[in-house]
Each structure stands twice: as C-alpha cells, then as structure tokens.
Image 1 (cartoon, helix red, strand yellow):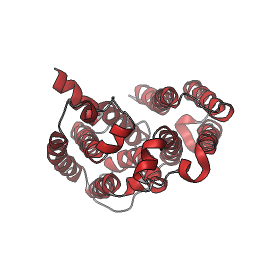
Image 2 (cartoon, one colour):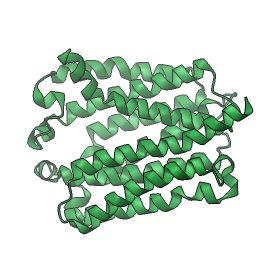
Image 3 (cartoon, helix red, strand yellow):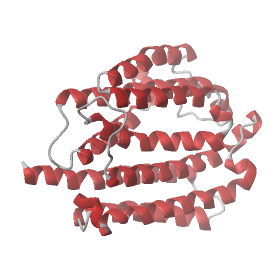
Length: 300
C-alpha cells in the first residue's frame, strides 16, 4: 500500500484528473452544449492526459532529485526513499508511449498537440528547468493546452485547421496566466536550492519580494479576463449566465485574497497559497463546465 501511495504521489494523478476535466470542458464548449463527445473519444483523451502527465512528472522527479533533497521536499517519494530513481524511469518508459499512442487514435491534430507537448516536457525536465524563466511558461502552457486539445478532439475530420470558440481561447488564456503565477510562487519557495544549482529564475533577477508581487499582478489580470464571458455576447453560453458568475466570483475571491497577501506580506506562506490557488483553479473549471452541462440537459 505504501508503494502504491508513493507512485500516486510521484505521478501526481490528481493533476491528470484535472487535465482530463479541462479536456472534457474544451470538448463540450466546442460542441456548443449540443451533447457529449463519443465514449471512445472521451476515453482516449482521458488516458492521453493521464499517461502523459504521469510519465512527465515521474521524469521530473528523477531529474529534480538532488534539488529536491536540498529543498527538503519530503512530499516527494524519491526524496523520502519510498521509490528508487530507477522506478521513476520505468514509469516514464511505460506511460509516455502509451499517452502518445492514445492521442494518435483521437485524430491528427490531437496527435500533433500531444507529441509537441510531450517532447517539450522532456526538454523541460532535462534542460529548460535550469532556465525557469522559460520553464515557467512551459508549465503555464501545459495548463492551457488541454482546452485546445479538447476542442480539437471533437473535430470529425483529420485536419490541421479548425475554428475554436472564443470561450476556449479565454479559458486557455486564464489557465496560462494562473499557471504562470503559481510557478513564480514555486520559484520563490525553491529559491535557495535553485540558487545552489545555478538555476535562473525570477527571484534570482528581481528578488523574492518582487517575484511575489509579479505573481499577484498576473492573478489580477486573470481575474479581469474571467468576467469577459459573462458580459460579452460572443461567449454565448456564458453570456449573462449567473451560474458561471457565481462560481467565477468564488474563484476570483480566492485569487484576489492570495494576490493581496502576496503584495502586502514580506514572507507569505507560499505552500499554503499554492494549495489555495489550486483549489481556486478547480472551482474555475467548474464555472466553465456547469453552464455547458445545464445547456446539454436543456437541449436533450
């Protein structure tokens, strides 16, 4: 049981579930509330997300082992000694190709998205992590691309071009911004260990205090953007939708609270606020999901 728990922790499978939900939301938005993606598309996209997420996190922990030891990351199974570095490589070798194979059977565009994202993940784990200024935006990209992937998954023809609904763009952009902020917060948390390894991050160039303020400002931009679907008619399902507004208001309240603390406190509890913002992101996902589900119930 201890091994199973350690494998779950290393592969961060809860993140995989959230990515799968993001893909489903992208698919439902693309279908404009007219129904669900077919069962085979749903299963294939779900396992594409789960396998690629799990494998790249395993590889991440393998490359990060020494830095994580210096940062005393006892939440990491490799640091605790619950799993060996070789196990992380085995898990990567099994799940990475499975994720690519699943994407191939969705459609051509999804296969290309998955392949590019997976190769970037390897590059990030092996090289980009040393330059966190780039790595942060890669992680943010990983949080945004599932919505595009979900929209592409329901395309019926193998094509490299398809029209994406405005709501998919806006949710992807919000995810990108919140992901960037959370990564900057993590840079501040890991600064001491990163400094010894020569990692170039925001705190190295602008200091921890200004890095926290930068993260807060990016959250504030995401908050402003989140109101656009409610007030702009082009966002259709979300336009003047009070279910959306209620959940977005809750999400934004949590992000605003985090932003204020990041700005006014010299040493905010970043570990706590990263967990808090992850919860806020999950509620934000529900804000985009619920109106589509209600539309499907209304139509069908």
